[in-house]
Image 1 (cartoon, rainbow, N blue to C red):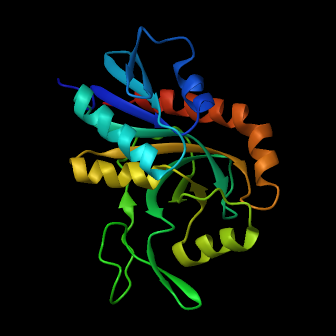
Image 2 (image 1 turned 90 degrees about the vertical axis):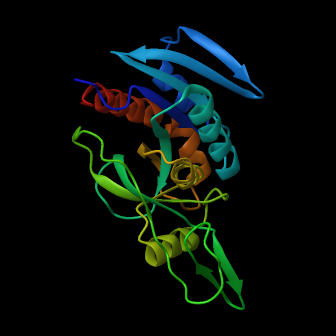
Length: 227
């Protein structure tokens, strides 16, 4: 029997998230431009892990580099996020991703469109659907990604109300869009550090290590259960 997803690429936004997953297991490290890529194995699977740096462009570039350089067949995002909704839990399996800052800025309002579509005419948002990973007991969530760290409860509420977002980060939807362009499946596991409000910066710093470890451990369990 041939197992699915033998070559997996993992993207994180900050170094602590990558370090929580690699945890001294790398058997090789390769430098590609400014990207430091760690290679390791989990069971029979070859894993390449990269900290892309923060933001959608960095994440999409890293996803593309992993996919093309290592012939990746599954792209994963792991790490932390802010919480937008009242969904119970602190670590989540992402089922859908959407870019929260793509669309048309009109007088008095921002109109959301599907990322990459023509932002003129009737507005429509199609969410990027994640590959279904093995069930490791995590609640499921929709994540909104954008190039702004959310420290405003009003903005967070807008993302929740307009886009149905449960979580917010700065990378996942960009990886999802890149994966679609590359013809690859993607998935993500995110643990929360803050509530996307005026206390976000302090809470993110205080909770980063714990949340990164939580997400990394959950992803390792999911990979181990892949068929």
